[in-house]
Length: 400
Image 1 (cartoon, rainbow, N blue to C red):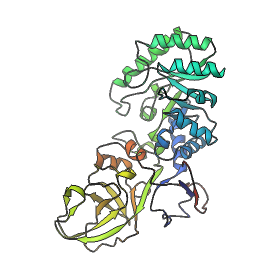
Image 2 (cartoon, one colour):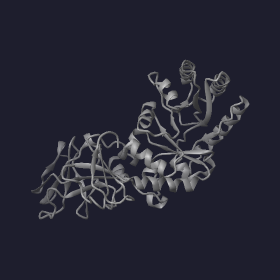
Image 3 (spheres, one colour):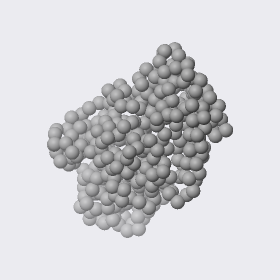
Image 4 (cartoon, rainbow, N blue to C red):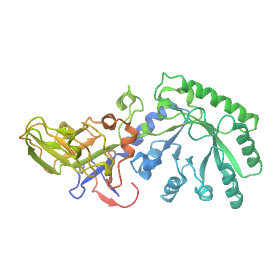
């Protein structure tokens, strides 16, 4: 579910909305423009997989295209088909397949397909049955060790692709790979991967395969490795306003977070010294204090393992205490006579709180990528475009 409106018209959540991930498409547009300025003249493919990194696939896709994105990317064909059903006609690349992938639907809906090896036979058969060539991008594994054709099998894949192309079954539009450590710019493995990739391009040319789109760079490489830009970059987390680097913030990169996770205080109570908190009683307060109950838990995407994670209540930063439960967690309000009351707004991260998804990532021993993508379906996406004129909030069903 998404609710369309404007933060200037509805600065607080409607009373009927108990919790929400507030999405600002203007931030996505801004971030795409910022990244495009770094990589020009290379094209920009925006990854909207995993429901647009938790922001809503359709919302993210439309905002990205409005910001100047040339392509969209999804992991699965099924994700790309959702975008087509929403009326999005921009080029889309889907690259992670199983034997259950509907290649025929992808070809029919003009969805480009990443090919790592075994898929080429299935794609060719689907194209032959449809009497319509499939648009494909061949993927070489240059060192990440996940998807992609091995260097040893690369000539064989190129030979098969050339044969299929000559028969009119496929059209090789691109050759790509994925980087393993671009978020650590000083590591030499990126240089090694680029060397393997360039050699793979040379071998492809020997097989008379010279596609228009060579693409390698992810978000960190878009910012730090101009030699990896080639014809197109594929960017994800940066589009949503988060830094891929440990030592550079989103603000350092000129990015604006597009998600603010909010709810309201569900309970406030005073407790004595020694009060245990949540399952396992892993935390006990060392003084009389007040506790606030926050109605979000690991079923909503709050990491169960997060320790002393920050929240923002009434202009002040507090910390979580005790284990995160399925539906809730506890915050120590640090004083017995607290001004915090039931119904006061709680910001988990984003907005003007100064708290970033990366702060929760640190508290949980994970990354900002995981924090934003794990927010569950029980949390409505509330789309509030900061560049639009104020308007009344209107509930809408379906993907945000």
